[in-house]
Image (tube, rainbow, N blue to C red; front, top):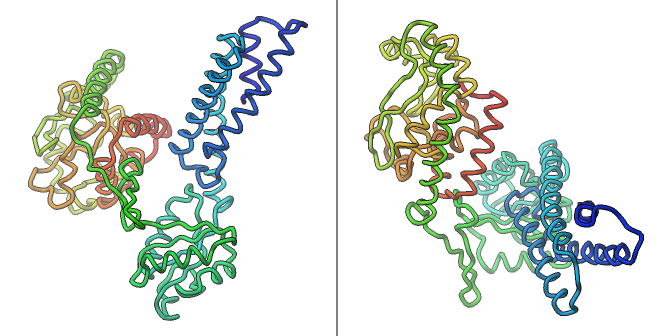
Length: 447
């Protein structure tokens, strides 16, 4: 990728390859830049297997290595007074970075596919109580892209614990190193348990030294994104500092601005589509093109949501007779074969076109482009942890949209919404918007 960027950078700057001293000069510069960039990338952790397939962390190391390489190149050029065409350097930097990111993205997709098939993953021994071991095994099985496959476990209890485990028990807490050797693992993951403390963890670490086995410790903390975590040393302890979720401030102001501008542009660009869809809906049964319904928004405030009508005009009156057939749970109501949905409504729901008028709500400030799912319930229906959904504006799309859509049960929907509320960021919003487009194109999960 880097060599390709250098070739295009040279040809773009000098138009053609000329047989003079300049060719030799730029060949030497290109070789030096190539070797330097690769070495800096390696020093930045871009080739460490533990970061492969992790997404943002992987790409950050690519970006950091590029910035450090060209910072180093600038210093060397200044010290030795090297005269290198700025157009060549700019082309190498921009094109090289784009090619590296694109190549890493394609490789990551391939790697995730391999890991989903059970290949190219770290074999892990899980250490902890049976309950903690099983919980971690389920998480690893649900996220194969993480590249960690649980194959065995060590628990502090009696041998009878084997009957409670989802993987084979190969030893106790005191013989982790020997158990790891017997199981043929390259990673030991220590989770929580009644007999696991600082001294136990230190002993496990010492016993694994020189064996080529990585030691990973899972904190008893879930639902918190990495950017909110930081280590704070205190004597011989390493404290895990958890930042509060951010519900106000400059980043929220930026989000509001992006929402309003995005909604305004979306309404202008989609006006022809709105007109066509409205004509089709009205011509189908003569009813209104739009459907309005009260939903609960930020801080429990009611607002009227705008959608294209996908049901017959008497749908609300027929809801009571269908309650007993509800296929969802919690505060959700869903029927795969809902008789109230019109033929054109089925298409609008599958394509998510029925959601587009909610851009009006975003423009009015009732909703956001990305956020928790707005529900047609009462404010008093949100109890306990579920009420934290109301700390932010609901969204047209969200983690629920890319995580299963209509196939999600209530517990999973709440978990995804709370994950968003707790760990929101601008980069997460952009990721969700991009993945929403892909999900809608595949036309899966909505009914």
